[in-house]
Image (cartoon, rainbow, N blue to C red; front, top):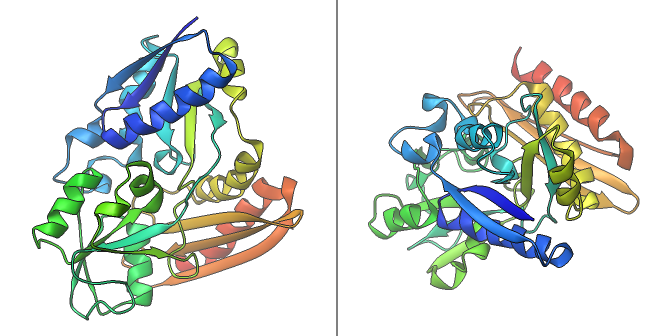
Length: 299
């Protein structure tokens, strides 16, 4: 069988696609695997924030069109880039084991977020990171930054920004840590992760039973269980890329500890919610958290 795997054309996306292929080869060593690189609208437009040009869905649009047109059999995504609700003819057929979910503070001059001097400029276009930064370090200046990892790191080297925040998993997958002068992995109690951060997922056509059965072979059920708690929250918020929201679920014995955050767009109000629930309560807990937090933020 010949599998056509769609991916964004960035170095990180291609690295993640090879991770997927290696996982599939364990079960299907005799298949042929073809990588189809697709440049998305979100990749092409780098001089505007995502919420100015249409949101995170712009990282999926061209890949989903390729699925519909039969140009690819499955698409590889960073799960944090997938909106809370997909169109009904698409599905997430598998999620790989989550690795590092944390954010990372990166600077050429300063060793950590706690001690960087007041007034310094942090590059981040993420409403979630902006809200949390305003909460823990309101004395810092946050300005938008877009682009691939290397592009953002070069802006730090050039002095355009004093520091930035990046997903630790991306830095790890691209072997960047050894190249960084200063970095700090930020704990969850300081910087609650984005929904799905650290996980790779496979999107397919919902009615493509053969491809979905193949993808299911590499689905990591424990990760899928935890992400139900996170993505249910995102879906029930009816959130878009302007929404400063975060969610992170972990196993605690035979239960799940789920943590949530919601802020208003101006980062003036921020509220947290945390609970421990049974493994099968992801949909219920996500809904409960969204209702609870919206009550405080939207009133």
